[in-house]
Image (cartoon, rainbow, N blue to C red; front, side):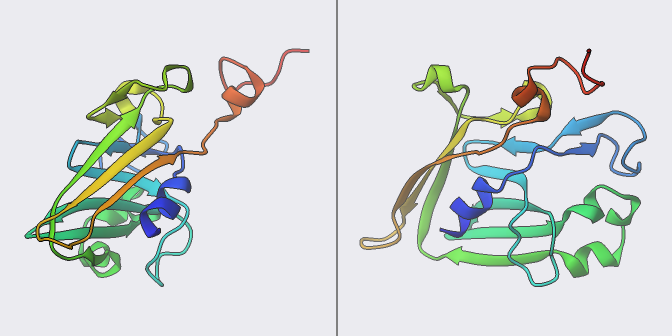
Length: 171
């Protein structure tokens, strides 16, 4: 349920394209990167005690373990990413043991309910996926097996208002 809660709290934020630039300088790129076996996104539901607010979450399988890593968003969105402070505030944990694989798929649109893709990069798509499908396969009999489709409850002001950009509404 941790993964579901964090995905449902996905935020449509951007990170600077150059990790050494501060937010607001250079070109910003949307941050939600998913492959078939790894996922990285920004959540408003971090788990680490030090990570209040927003965090960047990474999920992957390594050496038969489902791993989670969290980094405070403010460090990734600022010059502070470089250095010992970043390592000190990054939280990593094993979520499950005896895992053969994890697979992610990403739904493109509400209107195309049967259209799922193996990878998603919000900087290319200029949007978040509508949902994420997750399947965990065990490496041993009786090991952890899990399947879930998680809708992302994210809308931008433009989607709600129908405006094409973030300017003042025309009167």
